[in-house]
Length: 234
Length: 258
Image: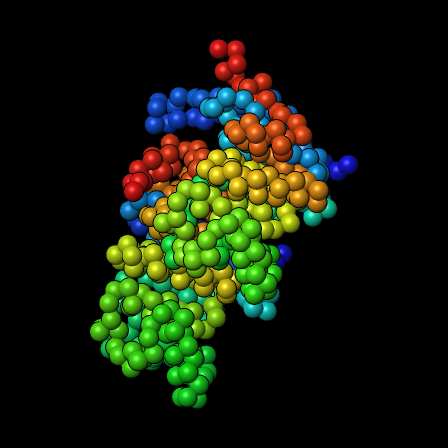
């Protein structure tokens, strides 16, 4: 089975120059991989570096050393050392991400926020919009909200817009940062079903789920991030 | 994005006597890419922009531009006439103060139409129609086409300046604090408009701003300048979310949260 994501010997620390150069180690010797059709869940207590690790895999945080190998359009790209253009191309075609919070853009309607990743990949506007509406419908976002910018939506509504945007494409790798944190039981079940469909379609998923119930339903394997944390010895 | 950069900048330095404007700046800009240059007043970002757009001659270094026929041309080896033609057709320059980029005493329609005429358009009806279309795209109502920009608000003037620049389908647009001096609600509208236009037209742009929110919204990549030097650069969300240099950390931590 192909392995679209391999993380190898990754280390990361923050240097806080505003605190006299205080160095905060986050993780070291991180090594794991995610196979196609598999959902790997990052485990460990809060503050251990799970979200940071997810951000490194997305190229949002830089790493100090190591490799993040992504299978992108038939070749392997090391995202840890890639230039901005390459990272953006990988994100557009291969690597999706559902963040914990939606970063809204003034004046852009929810349905357009969701359709944007498809438009970026050259899908026709009408088709992208139909797909976006189908996603929002499935996630039970009230139809009256579709044409409104999500800035004033509730946490749960914003999160559903975010999920719809992340799941709308056929990216081969999907990163999920607590996608069900502020959802009710009905919508949690929808997201669990959507994750199962992604797995069946051969997508490699890497996620953080604090909800035990959801985690038990989606996880094939748990990678304990505390084994990479320098704080484990402390 | 295609296989060759649109702009190649190598070791650009500009000295004002002994004072440094900017020093040893190098980068490539690719088609469809938006680069933000951030830093506080006096960091050299506007000097750099002026050197790139041939408004200032750099003290040393080279800027090469890929012409529509695919050839790379060194801007310093071009004649004044060639550079002016490039500036009027293939490039745009959006000034912070719209009065610097508009002709305040001619109509809005003529401000947009003038760049078309520079390209050889002569048919009055066509020019007026294209100008009208562009006013619509920047959300200026059609019945203002014969008004002078003197009668426009600051936000409208800035939108008009953008229409004037984009009407010739430029491939590269320079922007110097395009949202500076505007109310926040007007800023949001302008940013959304710029973002849409850049995406739809596949423009390359270099945006100088001190506003990190503007950089995040518009740019793919950013450079942080301090004392004339580029001290940090990379993917925009990487630089803003995981700043490495002391000065960048200070800038990012100085943003007011609402």
